Length: 82
Image (cartoon, rainbow, N blue to C red; front, side):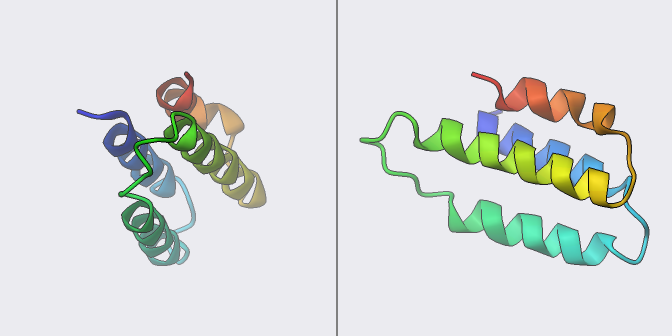
């Protein structure tokens, strides 16, 4: 499984830890973002790394917003690390 798909799966797992009334919004938001960036510039070697870092940082921000332990994103951090 490629790195971006693994990151998407981990983001969806993290969304399950959010309050039930927020899950549909963040699920849709995550899907839209991953779909929008599925065609990266193959000439830019840093593009995927930057997007995965952004996905991790945004996920941690959302977890903090809803008082979910940041350690929950450990697997996402492993996927997103270079």
